[in-house]
Image 1 (cartoon, rainbow, N blue to C red):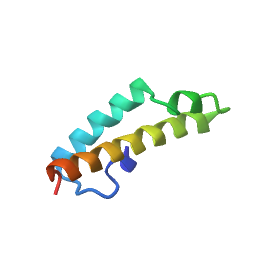
Image 2: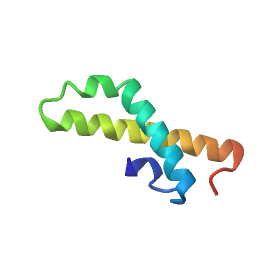
Image 3: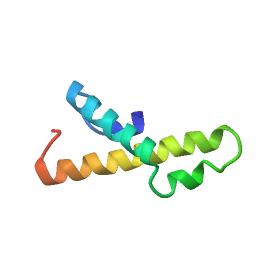
Length: 71
């Protein structure tokens, strides 16, 4: 989850929106998150979460570029 807001201001609104997007991507598991779960043991689960966090960070950066939020 921290990867989701790593370089953004950690305001309550950013944290809530980041969490919601993170959970969405963690549940939907877009490519390659679903495939990463086949890794043996705990790394598959951790890589899956890192991918969800990366997708969230990219989406928040896109929102920032298009709308200027969050500042």
